[in-house]
Image 1 (cartoon, helix red, strand yellow):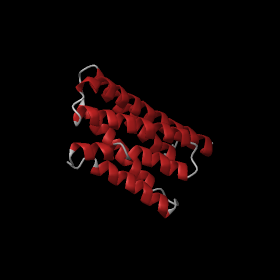
Image 2: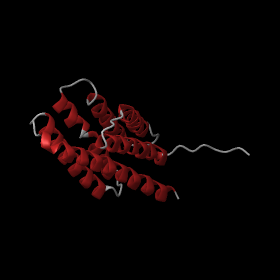
Image 3: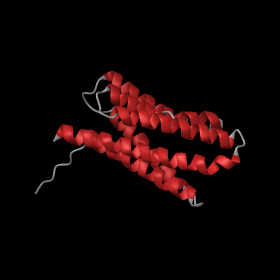
Image 4: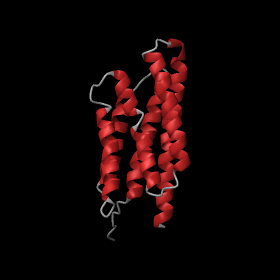
Length: 169
């Protein structure tokens, strides 16, 4: 028996789903008072791999490759030691950009892209209010919105995964 390993876009979307699961677990840990930075690091690596591997798919248009690489650059820039507000704004931009790239490709993730863009925006605003605005009373709300955002990322990755599974079936 000679099993054939098949790596497809579906595999890359599974990386995004795993990244979102790691972030959701990390956000839940923050809510219960036990933050785990390792989960954020694993999610960062998985997300970066997903973007780079999608940019390297053979036969995809050059414009798509550039867009995926732009998502990767935003991911990297968000972790480059920029001031916290700038880093948070960049961190809130790469998943929505990725989903809108997928929508441009014809993916059925338009609703997921809208929902994630709104969640990222609200989570970012609450985070900025707590960290830069001194609104410490909103910490729980900010953390809940972060958890919602991570779950929305996972839902979006699942939509992409299922659409690709249906396309290849």
